[in-house]
Image (cartoon, rainbow, N blue to C red; front, side, top):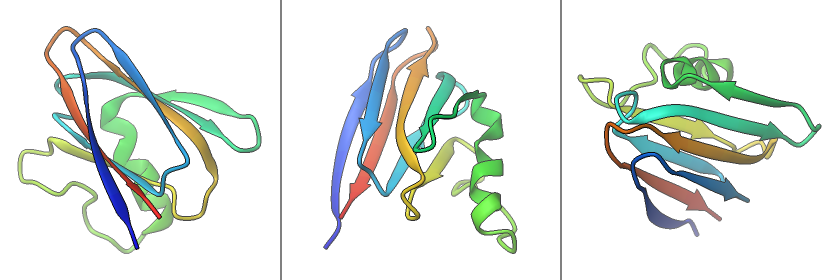
Length: 104
């Protein structure tokens, strides 16, 4: 069974998530400065929130849109394959971000 937890990342702060299957980022891209992803092979990259749909489409190429709302204010990081060791969400001064983390 899945277990979901919600975290609020305050403005100009950051939060690291590990051992997850998915992270749903609300208030993206307005309040997110960047998302840093550490892959299990040691590679690390920092993404602009507007780049997050590319991660979704790399797994679900036939899916038309990776955003779940008309305002494109929700980003999704999928880790069902377990290739992400952790991700860190960095917020800007625009406000807080609610992160919903799914784990098995």
